[in-house]
Image (cartoon, rainbow, N blue to C red; front, top):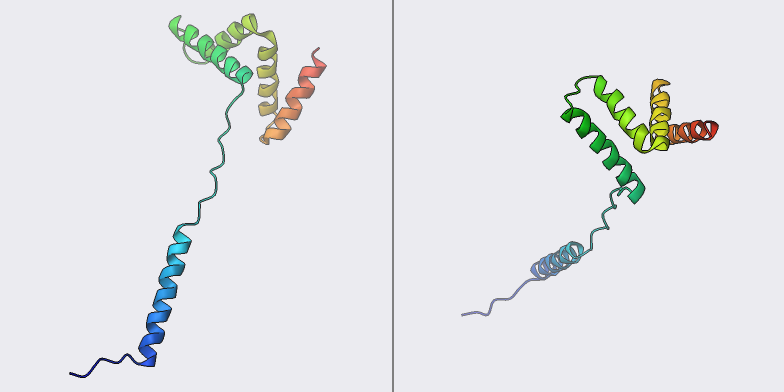
Length: 117
């Protein structure tokens, strides 16, 4: 039998396939970018949310339904945290004025609170 000789085109093809395989393996090992952390509310925001949730649960337990729930929650929050109640009222005014940008609403609420002192 004659020894099998590999021709120049076959060597080039093997060489190219080898580089492609090495390149694909190197790309697969690239670390993915760090995921963006989600917004985690601070302790004050969490306490405010808990107060609102507790007031809502209390109103529902008393049998309050429909639009009267909002009034009951506002009364409960006002009793426990008047500043939060004022902030909620200012935010509601901002939404009534068709503000949708978060920064714009925040600026409006801050100015509303500073004028109420």
